[in-house]
Amino acid sequence: MDRVAATIARYHMFEPGQKVGIAVSGGADSVCLLYALRELASHWDLHLRVLHLNHGLRGKESDADGEFVRDLASEFGYPFVLRDANLSRVTGNLEEVARDARLAFFRDEIASGLVDRVATGHTRSDQAETVLFRFLRGAGTAGLAGIRPLTRTGIVRPLIAIGREDVEKFLKERGISWREDATNGDLGFARNRIRHDLLPDLARNWNPSIIPALAQTADWALAEEVYWEAEIDRLAGLNLKEKNGFVLLETGCLKDLPLAVARRLVRRAMELGKGDSLGIEFVHVNAVLSLTATNEGHGRLQTPGLDIIRSFDWLRFAKLSPGSAGRGGYEFPVPIPGFLAIPGQEFAISLEVIENPKLPDLCDCVYNKGMVSVDTDRLCGSLTLRNWRPGDQYQPCGGSGELKIKTLFQDYRIPLWERRHWPVLRDQRSIVWVRRFGPSVHVAADSSTRRFLQIREIGIGRSGNSV
Image (cartoon, rainbow, N blue to C red; front, side, top):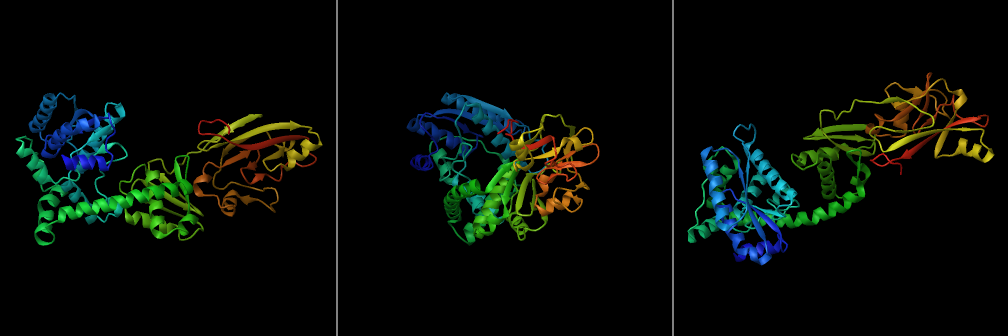
């Protein structure tokens, strides 16, 4: 009890008066956790309830586990919450599916407000197995940190410093029974092979203290990660931009950073773009860094769940989905005066006609860099605003002839992902204005113009309100 209390205090697992859900499967570890928190609850004035997920993998045995846990909760006078997750017909990696089902259960309980924390029965032995498993898969320090004693989502592991042998000794000395899960001996699961074959072999032939050594590695790696997470939080705030559901990173900043820092910043960008860190491996991070070897032209790669594009000096990280290539466009008639929000962008186009301005206003209409003007009387018919399309070309003011807009994109180093929604204004004859590149030479306002169509770009918030 002293070691469990010390672990709780070290990682600040509980605040006084919190509501704690105890995840109890019926196995030795979780039953020990239930008894331990029952004894220690008064130290933090905790309000306890028991959570049980029936995976439905062992038929009547699974149901009996649930009844066993229900009886324990009733004996202690704790509320009992049961969720059924019939995983018996699941295909794929059953361990991962079962873990995801448990985590979803815990998140839902926390989100409901019925509990502030969920405590699970992971032990030092589980920690050692996790570290070894991740090491064999090539994990870095983030992976070697293993099972977090306290997660950002509110899951805590009070037994993380206690070995499995100590758990069973505790229960036997007190005459406390528990349930045995037959699947824990199934060597078809990778974790069971590590537990029953690999770790005992390493303990016999290499290091009798292999479990404490691996747990110590996790402790060391976790301290490193706590520091790095704070540092990358700071750097991400300075260098990562979230726009239209994408994450953007300027490649120049990576070249100024030490390799260790650049790798971590890229990994953070990948996590933000994807929504989680699952499947992001060392080889993927290095592949992204390889994209930044030049800032000319474009490059692209896809990693699990991510579409990553480099265009000139920028990297864009986007969640990979069936529609992520984004082939849609837009086209709509232009009312004058009018205010048109550009689909998928955070700006709008404002159009207004000014007739016979006085001299100061005339100068403003023709020469103000914050907007452009075209001669209304030189336009042919109604106007249409649409996105750029391959093959579009026109002659901007100052140009010696017609240019493809794609050429202007390259000259102005416009990233690929911004081009698809790039606004183009047409009349019934030709293109009259393109964002950033200005009006066509054939319709641009000059000192002889009497009716000015002012075209102005206005920033808007995600809600559509002008800013």
